[in-house]
Amino acid sequence: MSHPATWLIGIMSLVFAGPLNAQITVTDLQSPYSFVNDPLEKNYFISSVNGDAETADNNGFITKLNPNGKLLNLKFIQGGKDDVTLHAPKGMALVEHVLYVADLDTLRSFDTTTGKPVMALRIRPPAASQSEPLLTSLSDVTFDGKGHLYCSDQKANTIYRVDLATQTVSVLVTDRSLAGPSGLAVHPKSGQIIAVSWEKGKISEVSPEGVVTELFSNGFFSNRFQNLRGVDFDRWGNMYVSDFTTGKVWRMSWDKRFQVIAEFLPSPGDLSIDRANNLILVPYEQAHAAEMNGLETPSSAKSKQEKRTLADYGFIPPPPKPAPEEPIKK
Image (cartoon, rainbow, N blue to C red):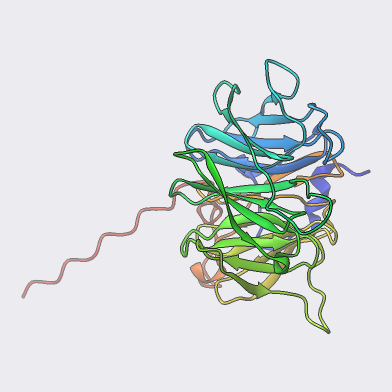
């Protein structure tokens, strides 16, 4: 198998380079699922399932990187060590100095500095009509910035809402049209919850009241998506989704145009965007690796004749704007 750094050859002009003018590749992971950044401490975290994704084997772990993408601790949080229970960590979200992790039927949280457990909140699926009760299968978690976490349950076609102040769980929506909700993200401008489907490759919008609206789906003559795993937004409101099966990362611009920005990727997982540094973070489950790369600013930001600089890719501060000229006194 080729080195992970060679997999992004198919990336188009939107992905240019990573921090320090080079892409960052993290290896020695074990079925990495999610890759997120800490906006406060500027560190990065990668969750590794390390085994069967539905088995309570208490051997999952979370890797910590420093602000430059360098490895700090491969197993910063490790199941079965130091009173930590962590079976198959999947999606993650950060709220201040706490890292929340979707782990089978439990939402767990850990201190981002010490790695010590903070909370373990078990989530039960809604009552079903089937003779056999469903088992909770949490796949992702996202924060709305208003005191609520949202968790997707892929098997139960359910999205839960967690009130952090009271640590209580409620069902936001259960709907078959979600078709196995995998990745979740909150739109940074509208506050709507975006859910991507694992089963039918569709993208849905869910209001804070639980109303589901289909945004995009495969048509009769078009099969754009297969098994979507991750979704997030950049600072301009462009949406990025990862297709685990086809090995592609798509970008949807504000005017609803889709473009493949990366392809031939080995099982891209629950991606996320570091908006402050304009970076895309992608784990590769079957390749046991993860990468971060820079994202180019929208093409409309500069004219075709004007040369781009590293500031366009988030690596250096933009140059100061010239002071307005004073009017000529008569």
